Length: 338
Image (cartoon, rainbow, N blue to C red):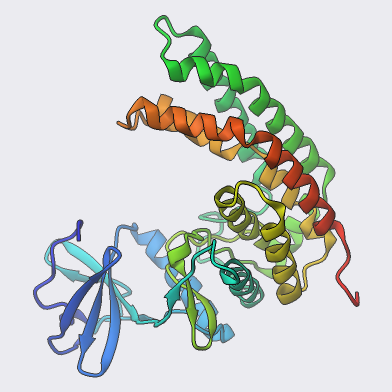
């Protein structure tokens, strides 16, 4: 396991006896007698820790099944210090990690999301602006659109263009047109009214739907690792889940329809909120992210890796557009019995 050094007395800040540590995905399984805990290194700052603690406390009070309970230290703190390292202790959750290409697993993740979003109603963030995205999408998308245009200009104006520069400049007009289309769809949608209502009523997003954060347990699907949680419309999470699933499946719309229907059945969401899905999925997030990785973050990847990302985006563009058109029809339908 890479990362923090193995703590010598891992249960001490929580008053637990010495236990057995087993590395699991960047954290540890801590076994103390018959009790099992997740000992997780903390990389979040103080405000982030407080925000996540407030999320877990709210979900626990709401009775969401499977939500991990954060255990305070003997001093009542959400984080325990061991030397220079910081850790959190949570209840261990048994379960099988989801595999989004395994039949039924993505639908189970959709149900877990729906339950989270229902339980998240009434959440009051501990800080009024921190990790609160109600109404922020147009501003954030326009900023990303401007950065996309800047990356395209850097690619075109390079004195010694690389293969990546040439490919990025070639594809950029398509991505910019997609960004404009997504922004126009968002402006025509009920986004602002839905955001204002969600701000008043409270709403939560998990915001990190990697397959290993969805556990299939004996009591049903559950979500773990809320480090990136934020206050926003639930459809934000649903779009992220669909994007992961559809990319894996080559933009075949059938699994997406199944997940969308599973979510709507569990959450009771109607066409108004679902109308936001199309612009969310259409916006060229991955193209912006790849440009940022290359031109801003300068990630030390081989150029072949960057070129593979661009080729995949280009090659799947027709299937992606057709898939989004089909999902739009599914999203706009009224629920059965409504």
